[in-house]
Every structure is written in structure tokens, then in C-alpha cells.
Image (cartoon, rainbow, N blue to C red; front, side, top):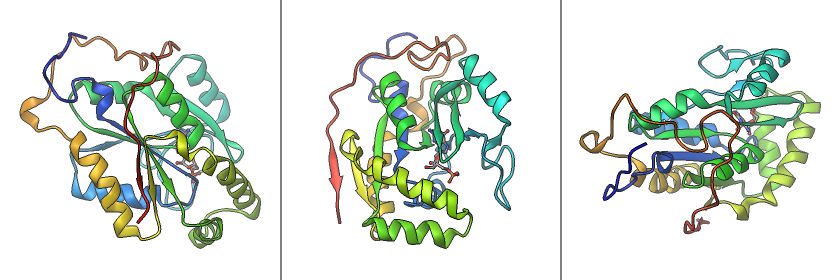
Length: 233
Ligand code: 5GP
């Protein structure tokens, strides 16, 4: 890819926002609100081996794959990242992200913490936000209130949440989701500077793959020195 000096957000992956945090913390709800405000932002659709919940559609909520097809995609280097979560595999298809970023779009991933770590290693300039619940009790209430998980799945999600919370400090930004509208505003404040006016987008058919996203297993370089922020309102 040709150097893009003197352009803010010249590195395409600096237009990639990774929203992570425990299952049930409200990542999807916050993104739904922000995507309604900013329809130009593209939300990546993940692949998963988890069976669809009622109302979920293939290609809209997830690409629902059997494990063999999922692992075949892994072997072919098709995922930017992937992880096991509560007994199922989840992964982010690399190709669509690469083309959206090259087209100048801002892209958002909504993924669990292990996958976010992998993205950080491969794309160090991606912006990482960890969404934190006010307490474990609130988190469990929210997971139960969704009514979409078995007891076994709830137990796995809660156990995993404890591990994930211990890793919050690794992320560029930590946003507390106590008050939903405040949390939406806090994530918006991070997202807003990542949006580019159409006039300054770099376009072109001959763009080389983004380093770290090529899908060939090559790791990106070390982490950039981004400034951490904490939104604890
Ligand atoms: P759920 O089963 O509730 O839809 O998702 C379970 C967890 O997997 C959530 O924390 C969700 O953010 C995460 N997740 C969804 N897609 C991906 C993905 O592509 N990669 C990773 N690593 N996690 C994902």
C-alpha cells in the first residue's frame, strides 16, 4: 500500500474499532445505537459454530457454520482472529474487513476478549474498547434477562466473564456500562474521530493487503503507543 503521509488516520486499521467485553455487557445494544447514528460505519459479521437463536439469520447476525467448515476456514487463513467461547467457535472473516478499510470505511468488530487480543497483535493501530459491567451480579441479570441461553451456557459465560474482566486493563479504552445512554456517548466519543469525511478517503484498485490482515497467518508488528482512557461515569 502506498504511504499516505499527512493524512490523519492514514493507516487503514486505525479506522478499525474493536468493541470487546463479557457476553451480556451490552456491546450489541451500544453498537445498534451507534450504527443508527452513523450508517456509514460497517459492522463486521462473524462466523460461528453456535446454533442460531430464534430470530437470528445466516448472513445477518452471523454466518452459521458447522465445525468442519469453520476449521477449514481457519486452516485457509480466512479469519483475522478466532476464539472458542462457551463451547463454540467464533471468528472474524478477514477479507470483507480488508476491502472496507481500503475503501475508506470505518469498521467495527464486536468480539470477545481473546479475539480482541489477536487483533491487537495483528493490527496494532486498531482502536480497542473494553466495555465493563458495573458488577458481576448485574452482568448475570442481563444474561438471564436475554432469555436466550441455557443454564450451562449462562454458567460458562459467567466463568469466562471473570477471566475477561481481569484483562480489561490491557485495552486502550475502558468504558463502564452502568447507564446505557452514557456508555453509548462514551463509545461515540471514541468512534467519532475515527470517521472520515468522504472527500478524504483513499480509494484505488491496486491497494496492497493491509499488513496483519492478509489472511496468511503473518502477525502484525508491535503495539502502538496509544493513550488509554477510562470512562467510569
Ligand atoms: P453470542 O453467542 O452471545 O452471540 O456471542 C458470544 C461472544 O462471542 C460475545 O462476547 C461476542 O461478542 C463474541 N463474538 C462474536 N463474534 C465473534 C468473533 O468473530 N470473534 C470472537 N473472538 N468473538 C466473537
